[in-house]
Length: 97
Image (cartoon, rainbow, N blue to C red; front, side):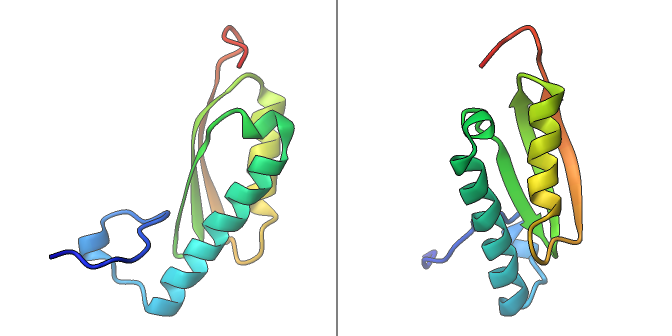
């Protein structure tokens, strides 16, 4: 039986070697970035995926412009306790969101 817990922003949960404190910090980073994205009119509509592991944030999804992508990366980089950002955001200028 699987008991409750937050898998938000985690990968490989069965092999996760983070301490409870590291997991809590990563979840807090993810939640903060998601909240900031939701408050931003350009980014909020983009539905970006945000995952954090050991302070490294991975961003995935598609945005309508390079400016939106750069803003999303900047918000993530300027969030407390973020060590690095793995930007996997695609830009599709042909499909305005």
